[in-house]
Length: 416
Ligand SMILES: *Cc1c(COP(=O)(O)O)cnc(C)c1O
Image (cartoon, rainbow, N blue to C red; front, side):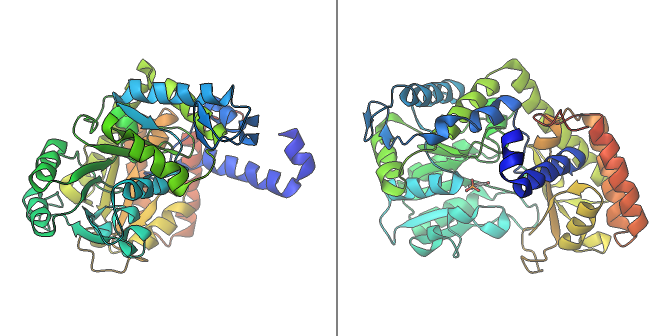
């Protein structure tokens, strides 16, 4: 990064500091990951210089000889990996991908049915503060109070009552596998489209460690930068009969030119995700999340749904005499980075809720296995049990750094 250093010392220094932070801290944020050096390189290419509004063979600018091939390759790989009939790789990120689906199939005021945000759904699934909740009649389903599980009977009753045009499955904080067949059945009963937002678990689907929604859903959206371990971006997978509607909604519906450097990096990530190594990775993510969940429950932590079947878990820290925010802040000071998170039926405010969320995708990318996850559980518990003990936080941060040192993160091997 010599040119960057010479041009802009301030940004260069900040990038270096961030590299060090990512390298030396235990990253448990469920939506984050470490991309490979190959994905980083593709992201930083001159493809960022090109404008290519439109789609391969039908562009509005000349000079697409190379870019068309890049985008076609990304699409081909996505189709093969997920068994999808049609794929659009242009959405700038997960939120615009979802907005494009709504534009393709809804008029303002139409009804959608998604998981409530405080129960693990995403902002873009109809939260009142999001365009998805402001421009549409957004109805939501909740989790079952006693178990923290999805209540399919309630989803069915809600769907029959509100007759949505689209039923959305998918989440940012639900630790269980979704019953796609059941959702499909409900959608068919009420004549709704069935959309799955697999942003969080797309990598697990790619690696065969989670059932695929593709055979069940009309449309599947996903980010490319979470468990899928690609650059920041998104894709929309759909049945052939919706291909035109989706493509038109992305461009010219809500976007202009695609980020071609990102498209190239998505193609690289998809190639990586097609390997046996990635299959092992995806299965190890699930095993690692399970190991941390078990370790925490053995120490008396209350996990929503009593465990996890995917890469993430949601922990109610109330019985440890601490709020989620206070726990998250103390842990960050101790070299363990995660986020505070509302739990289902949380009685505390969203800005200082009762829970913390953590995921295993990033730490598994650096090679952590069950042994290291159990060690993380021990460190977490030490901090949460004594969050104001500054010397303890410093000691744990040192231990976290040591643990990380033995497992250099992808793309950060040069940090010592
Ligand atoms: C992260 C996420 C998104 C949004 O992705 P951005 O890239 O942050 O816009 C959408 N849906 C779900 C379920 C997510 O977890």
